[in-house]
Amino acid sequence: MTIHNQDAFLSNVAAHLGRPRRMSGVERPTWSVRPQDRVLAGYSKEELIAVLKKQCKAIHTDVVEVNTAQLPKALLEAIERYEGKTIIAAHDERNTTYGLEPLYEQLGEEIEVHIWDAQLGEENQQIAERADIGISFSDITLAESATVTLFNHKDNGRSISLLPKSFIAIIPKSTIVPRMTQAAQQLHTSVEKGEVTPSCVSFVSGPSNSADIEMNLIVGVHGPVQATYIVVDD
Image (tube, rainbow, N blue to C red):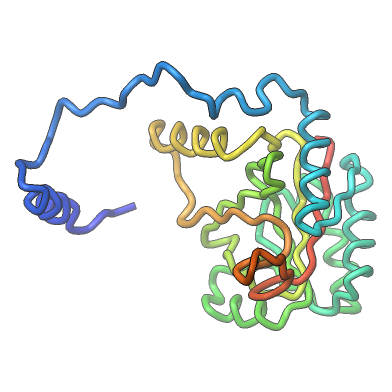
């Protein structure tokens, strides 16, 4: 990734702070107390799933637990429950790993199934806008808030989880962590190692909602109106 005008920008910020720009000697502090690390510390995957399920009730999200062999059937049932006639899914290698390609091919004989195609550019967004269902894999799953973390890039546009009427997230059990603290740590470590980072990271907690008016929760205001999480024991 190329960063343009970085030096000019940082120098301008330093000038407005009334000091020279610091080019060295800046170290991350070592905090003596880190309460964020203690939340749900020591929980097993099963205990974290229980936390996830409880929070899903609060955010109006259905949860299904399956093994890898049961995933295609569970996904089909969710699609049928949402009466999906137009589906958009990420171009993800896990479609192959988890045996979803045959299901998508089968469904494609009766309904419209679109796998995100980077070569189509904005046409993908137009398809997502009229789609009944968007399907993505979670890359990191936060049990505390029942949040799926989606690494968006050229093969997995954020429109998949934002524009369709319904959203289905496939959650590999191995991706479940206690909370945002661990997700931030994973992303920070990835950057430090120089690994390829996503162009955008989306944090999605169930269907769209708002509680702006007197703290009354309204679901389905600016995105998917219903959501299902399928937890896969991988």
